[in-house]
Amino acid sequence: MNIAKNMEAIFVAAIVVASATTFATAAVNEPAAPVAPVVAAVKADATAMPTVTVSAKRLTAAEKAAL
Image 1: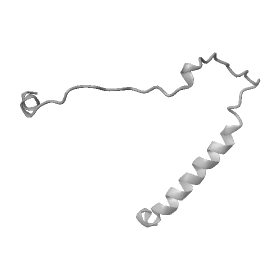
Image 2 (image 1 turned 90 degrees about the vertical axis):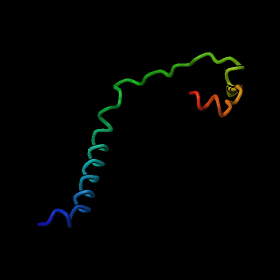
Image 3 (image 1 turned 45 degrees about the horizontal axis):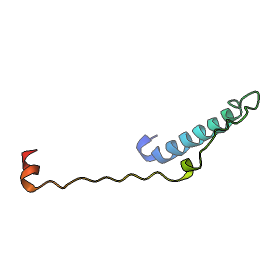
Image 4 (image 1 turned 60 degrees about the vertical axis):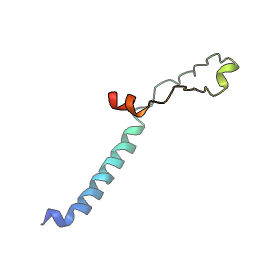
């Protein structure tokens, strides 16, 4: 059996095993009791998207060469 010719089948088999394992263990990780959601107080200003303004002078060719 030449493994180089069957690498696609080996890869697909590994993906199938990994997927099956993921679905099999998904139910195990559920918490025993439901957890109450955490509610945070949000200010009206906090809902706006923060913006950043960057202002600086450009370096001249001589300043770039000095760096």
